[in-house]
Structures are given as C-alpha cells and as structure tokens.
Amino acid sequence: MRVVEEAPTNGQVAAFVMTGDGRTEQKVLSAIAEVYNGQGKFLLFPKSHFPKKSGLGVLEGIDEVFKLTGHTRFLVLLDREHFTKERFQSKLRELFNDYTLEGDNPYIVTTKQFEIFVVVFGNKNAIEEHIAELINLESQTTVISTEGSDVQSLKAQIRTFLKTSRHKKLKRFLKSCSTGNLEKAFDPLISVIRMFEET
Image (cartoon, rainbow, N blue to C red; front, top):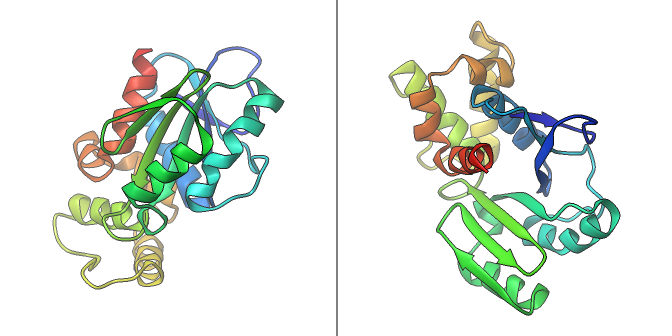
C-alpha cells in the first residue's frame, strides 16, 4: 500500500486520508504503509484536503470531499489532545442522522454513504508519543523520556535522536524498524492498514 498525493490512474484507492495538520502523520503513514505493501492499493493523502480543519472538525469536511471527489471511504487521523469519546460521539450525531460506531481505536463509523476509520494517536497528546515508544523499542532502552514530556519536548528529543542516528530522517528510521516493534508502537494504525489490504 502506498500513500499518494494525487489519485492514481491505475490501482485502487483504499481510502481518502484526512487529518488536521498532517505533516508528521503523512511521513509516518507513508513509511508504515510501504512496510505493509501487499495489494497495489493506495491511500490518497492530498497536500491540502479541501476544508482546513483541526481536531474533530476534520470530520466536517467529509461530505465536501465526497461531493468533489466521490470518495466514500475515509481514514481520519487525530491526536489525542483533540479527542474525547464524548466529543467524538457528539460530533457524529451532529453530522450524521443514522450511523453505527464500532471499535475502540481504531473507531469504525458506518453511515448510509460513508465508511470512516478513525485512528487516535497518543495516550495523552499526540503521534510523537508513538514515535518515542518506537525509538525506545528499537534502541532496547529508554532513549526518549515520555513521562511528563509535552509534545514540544518529545519533538525536540525525536529530532536529536534522528540527527545523531544513522537514519537522519523520520521516514528512513520508520522503514528500518522491525515489524514487531512497529505493531507495538502503532497498533491502531496498522490494524486499519491491514483491514484496507484485506478488502
């Protein structure tokens, strides 16, 4: 499975990817999707998806993306700092008259028109927590302290690790990691990628 910014002329788009900010998410998703590449499917992750929203507001753009592109299957990537299950359910009730909600990260929302897979990153804040966990797993020691670290502190520690490692770039590091460690650190995301590969 590959992440692309424009719809491919050949191959099946498994899902249209939406996120608030997206730079780190795109690097992570691209690297991990390539590791689990199996069926020649694509994840469409445009540089800027149409309505620029953050947090749960990203869900508001689904209908507009559908009207412009015809896509009905979405992968929504959110950071924990913008998410509570109560606010998520409230947003779903606001947007959809009739839907089902299954799972607990990944969440699978099914409406008459759409299938929406929602992955929430971070135990407290953001995707950087997963990257830090993966670095520690690969290093077999605590290289990055996650206890009491905010997002900016984690970003700084991750940058320092990458600069001083042989990988230099996040995507290169991710692609070098063992699948076992990727699965431990990014379980919800990998679960969704596997679902996309199977269907």
